[in-house]
Length: 73
Image (cartoon, rainbow, N blue to C red; front, side):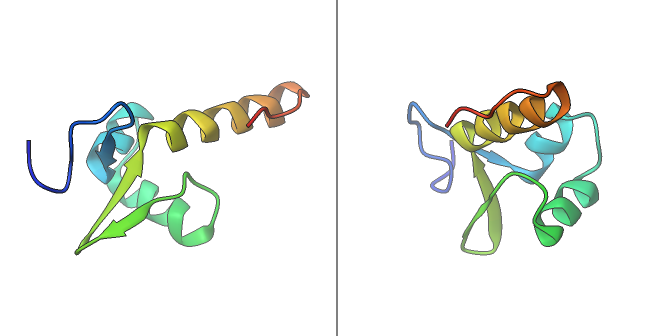
């Protein structure tokens, strides 16, 4: 495991990991971040990483928007 991806209960995911998770391309994930419509990433050095908890929050928010529910933080 590299220094930028510490072993924690809330691990970081790379842009490639996020793209694989959502069956899309890394460029789409970068576009989402640039447009402010994707999960929030954190820049560490030259890399943008995404916390697992942030991906789960973003998924709940999408689910709530699409199914008429309320997002739970």
